[in-house]
Image (cartoon, rainbow over all chains, first blue to last red; front, side, top):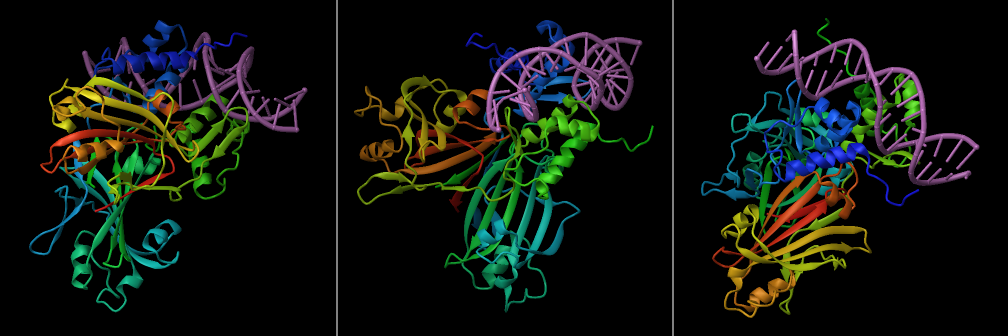
Length: 246
Length: 246
DNA sequence: AAGTGGTCTAGACCACAAC
DNA sequence: TTGTGGTCTAGACCACTTA
């Protein structure tokens, strides 16, 4: 058997299309040849063509619109949405996000009491299972074109002896002013990771095929670096760039 | 026709496995039933089973090992690698990365001269096409278990009238000391995005199926916030968490 | 040798979008 | 009505891993 093994046919097809997309033969937004066409061109059956296309979808190079065709997604240009990360304190004492976006909670925002799972307890430096006030909202901005999932967690232990023992504190960013009123000096650290969304996340955030999810965990700390609260942001990784000063 | 359309069979299979993975029926690291088994259990053909499995692979929930079987990838635990982002200046004037990792360039590291493409020119605030010194290296750390692609770009225009007009400056982080010697006070900003890797990137960085790529662009600025240099980091998004102080 | 996943065929029928 | 992609079958043969 020859040491040089031929590439699989579906890979050749994927490679052909990928090349065409990256070198401009198939310009962004334009339709690609139909599956039937490709099957004829390459002399293979349609399932084989579809297997090649599945690769391109998984890598986010291509968008398929049912009944219409397959289209090139805009390639490696810079993302169009830049979101500087940070919290600014206004002269009037309010805290605002550095990206200046105005987010609106969807109708199904909730306030609940939950017990800290391991991953959150770790970041908050509390024992796993400790109760926390929890805000949960799907937020939109820019007339619904931008979406993010936002959760705020505040451990009960942080609120002992305050007016928030019975009533839930506000969600971030209003939470910051409330914590400052309680006498805390606030610092923030963000933890960032990325992964592919689960189907329900993809649906809620309208994440297309082949686009990763960006997850940001923001920990609010006091002057002694003791964690006071935690926020979780989940954002579509598509067409998004975030920035940090060092 | 009933308005309630049944889910596609391959989706039911994917959903069954996904549930089992998330609720612990199929523990991490354990093999899942073989394709043949699943085909019999669900009364479908093997290609249908494979279509369902393809979904799980694309979302990174499952790892398939040729000839051995399909295994559950450790699910939504916290990533095990934490890399704080930042640059520290040592008392002796050296600059070091805040994550404290020791990276080794692979054998194929190169120094070239390239012309700035639009995306880089934008970040460096130079005209597109302006020449730059370019370092390019695939780096490894922790005995090869960690990998990243690292590129350093320095526009010629920054080096006019310095000893680096003829000879390329060192790559970052040594570059920082060199720029400091030239009298610059250094500041840094990082820009972050995520996307699925292309096949060559996935191979070079050993990124498994369904794992996104994290791209970090670090701009080095002088006291007037004029960009002096640019670094590009490409990291496997798998099992990785990075952190920033705000 | 047995069991696993990888590739591929040659069709079929359906759902959706555009004309 | 036509063309597109979405789903599915019932096999076949191959490559790889483990025993």
